[in-house]
Image (cartoon, rainbow over all chains, first blue to last red; front, side, top):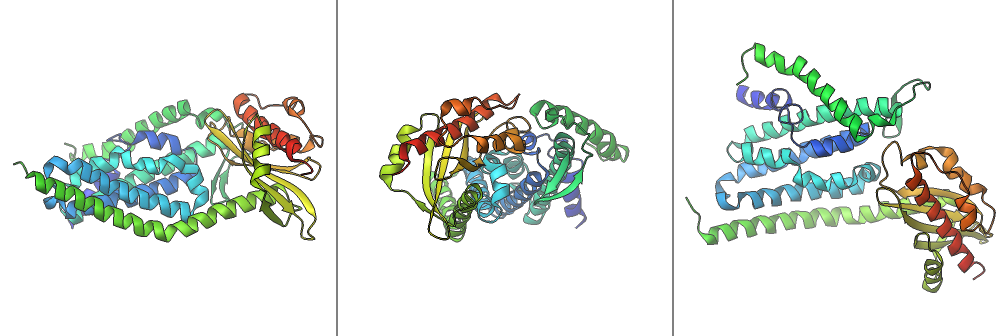
Length: 209
Length: 190
């Protein structure tokens, strides 16, 4: 149990896919212009990551080494297509915003990376814990990132039609925050903050390898 | 340790068959809902751009072809006739697309019987967030098209203001409206 908890927490803090492993950044920078889109993107990634980790871990002894990558991809692509169809059917407004980035979860390195590096070598429960941890770690960062970008880039954060927070109307809302240069600059600031606040805690306890 | 070729083939085939089965089930559950959502979105857009109309009917293919040929600035994708609740002719709904900065900008434009723009809305676009997307978020931009005279032409549309920093996105919207105007002139009275 303690081991599972460690695996789970590691995905959020010490091995956070966005802040530490720095994989799957392309989609992250692209969809984090809108808080609502980022929330659903996070949910989609948690689902695909956990399900593909679980399935691959269950069948890992039956997956021959030589064809493991094609088989991983088929499993991942199936779950992504399920998410794609379900989102299209039930949350069309979110789907319209995320568009191509949902099908592109198939090639998101986080998913294949965890399948190859973790699920293929570990038990089912540990793989599920890893999928959940990595997924939540991803979601936490992208949601926070999108919140900051939408707030300072367009002046107000909206979720399903309701305004969560708004800046006063005299704030000029620079468009650069929503564009890619702003994304890179902000991402750098996020990394610096993460290093200062989260990673250092691990180091002081001497857990870092 | 190398696996036998048979085992390799068998495991990949099994995975694919199971995956395809799972997808078929998901698809059959979601397909009717997706189709309904798309129809509803189209109806909502048409009701918004032509508020006087209570129901919409697609026009005959001959008319659609004539409209497509006349519209040089954009592609006409669909053409509906709107009828008011009393059965009176309420005008036309035109779905049209034109190339913007990041891909096609797709719009629905409502014209009354005389060819005056009643309303217009953007169905989908892939313009730069914060720059090109202002064609939708800056109210005055879309509103100015509703002030065009009945039976307007290319020149009237081109004379309208564009949004600075979003030249190509603005041009895409203008092309959509110009195409709708040209289509109307080709099919009016038919």
